[in-house]
Length: 240
Length: 225
Image (cartoon, rainbow over all chains, first blue to last red; front, top):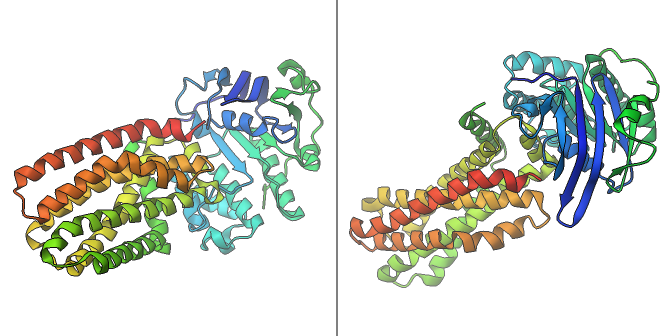
């Protein structure tokens, strides 16, 4: 069962790994149909925040709410989360078709074949979808990875340095796909070191420094009003 | 999705990859064969000594080949950070552990079939009368070994130590079960009555229950956070 929500909030998020304090009381808020860009230097807590939002780790203190659902107490929220990272998260010895079929089954999709065909078409995977992923270029891998992340139409889409190592054409396809997901009403959180990508996609920008929101990022209330204008409308067809 | 149906998806994925590459079974079987051949050349003196040495050879080959199989199986999860996609999926995380453990059991079962035949030939043993009992002993020992090994191997995916965790930390934990396996197999090949072997079988079964249960409960806390 997929739970409904139109915002994700993190309240007082603290994450401690041994002697390292990765996050120190971070308050964040993400809304449907918005791209929030998280920036900051290495070690500032960006990836930790994404791990918490992706339900891969639990906060040491604080609370994550998917709408009214407390992430610590609600089962089934993982079905609403999609993650695209620098690493493709696909098995090198499976083909694109097999990777998407595996993802569709793991997410319990009923009409998996139709959804896979749609994604293969949308992301232009057809020509090489029958080859093992080990033979793909970086751009092809990223397209497959994006298709895998979207196979279950996630409500919350987390993007962790998705443009690393991509050429200009692949980055444009990525931007198109993100805009399509934003238009669909997804909540999108983007971690990037690429200012140009952030400039093109961000509706809201947050900066982390040493596990805290940088002063310019402010509180959730200020964040809601600190949006930058969108630099273009949603591209029909996404990454095609 | 139920625990077992999710575990089946993970197992099927491992089998699908293995059928395509043959990597785990082929390398593991070759390694186990090498162990059997080298030890037979070194330790075989006569049929009487062979009955004492062969059980040790068998279990050493299984243990080392098992470490190799699990190491390779989990290194596939590390490639492209594919394991993260499993952790993100809305399935019980214990299903990942069960699926990976069943995959290891399948690979090792194939290797053990070949290994038993090789050991029988190299050490001139007639195993026809005890084949079923020997298969049962190996199955019991392999379940505990794979259950524990996959837990340690999974820990290695999230740490820098990786293969070191598997090689160094696994054997002290699994040693009692391996000892039981070796002694029970020696008694079986030596012609001991079944009631004497049952004591070892019960200990092995108890280890299996403990290892599998611990693995299912510890897997998620160990691989997350």
